[in-house]
Amino acid sequence: MGSVAKVLHLVAVVEFAAGAEEAGRRYEDAVLALLGRHGGRLDRRLRSTDGQAEVHVIRFDAAPDTRHS
Image (tube, rainbow, N blue to C red; front, side, top):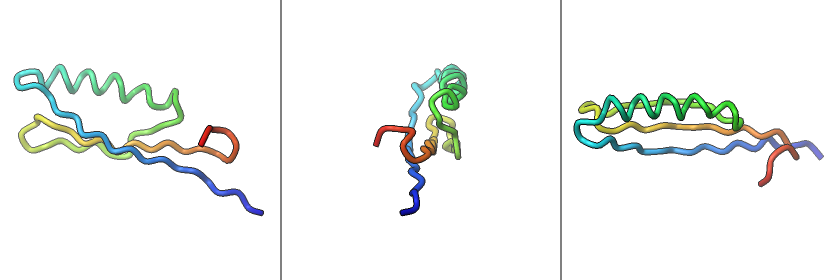
């Protein structure tokens, strides 16, 4: 029987406190840079027109039998 690749997509909506948008973006830059350590990657990072929110589409790939279900 063939193996099936397992993929997990997460969508995170991040809202920044008013007046702290730049600090929030810097924090998210640092956190998102860690995804590779955990087998993940950022597929998309979208920002609202007012800069107060972001949407992150994060993907985790798992080869068969290498990650817990």
